[in-house]
Length: 116
Image 1 (cartoon, rainbow, N blue to C red):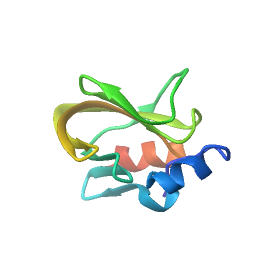
Image 2: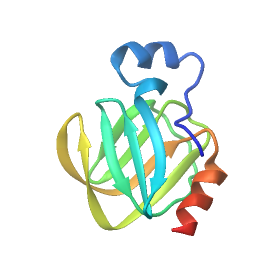
Image 3: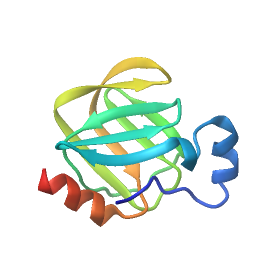
Image 4: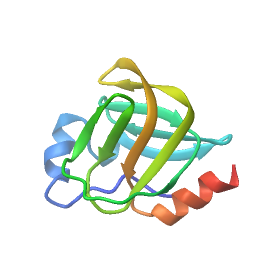
């Protein structure tokens, strides 16, 4: 379907840290979107729409239930989670209300979430 998008200059930095494409995933199964970025992020969320930037950071960033998981500032999809779900940030449980994630095919991700 789609993958987390990584800028060409960021991929060689993220990969040795365990946050690169080989350890990052975006999948939809049983009405739930599962997003991981290595050890840095893991969550299951239900809804998606295109996001508007700008997005100033790369990697895993957030605060108070709103998180950005990206390897690029392009192709970012916003997931509004209601009711909030549990996520793990660096292995620590937190509540996730909004997730912004950069993917290679935003339209496919939005369509997949819309079918569920």
